[in-house]
Image (cartoon, rainbow, N blue to C red):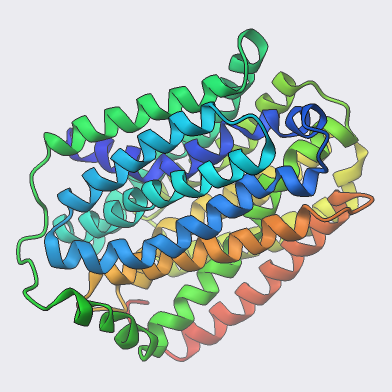
Length: 387
């Protein structure tokens, strides 16, 4: 257990580390390269789109060849692409290299969730997902702060050098870890992709994936819009922005930790209800108080992010409960939906809005209301795994 949790947490944290470290540099990159913010934010949007696309391939490949080999290949690509990102001299180059970086990073979080399915089951898996979420939440807390420190003392290319080192540490961990898939499929790879057809014909799985993806939509819009809000609208420095971002990331860890403690006395379905309601209320507070200053904005976002941390471990577990096989493909499709919808949110908030705060509030309010309503309907229909 001591060796399993840190490795799974590191692999799951790759997206947050790969996106959040560069966030403090986004406004300065726009100024340095004389590009609008909507163009610079493509380093986030394209990363998310590519990441989600390649997830669809790593899942079936890992079901056919095991988890270790695809992980080692993906991490090797990630390291090379990170070093190329550090050498970029303009926005188009950085966008292209970020696409390559995402192609490598996609192996990590998808296969880490599949490995969790391989090793653990039932309530134990839900507990492990909560532990991983707590450890993983440190990534978006530390990443922007680390990025801010790097910008203060060095320059933005060093952010990608650090990410390359992180990928190397991941490779060392995978090399020391045994293969977790006990029965490797002998089905030809061309037919392994048919697993997505089976998943798409599983209505309970698809519905749960869509509901949980919509619940995370406000978080991804905040990630892409946060630097513009704190730096451009509130006039904070890059370092101060990183601390406020870390404060919101702390909410994710507190929410996941609370989930771990509260599952002993409160059922998972009630925790999910509380979490979805919290997203709705956070959006309402954001619309009412979000423009009054950085702390008013941060506290409203804290409620939203805390609520997502509270509901995400049981939500992920409930999605996986809807499938009896094709765990790798199910994990890949789940995270693909998360990141694809997240990329849409990042693109949307990057448009030239006069004030992004009311837009963020409206998104959170709308998504919270939709997910809460859908969740009540699903409970009445008795979806699998809801006690």
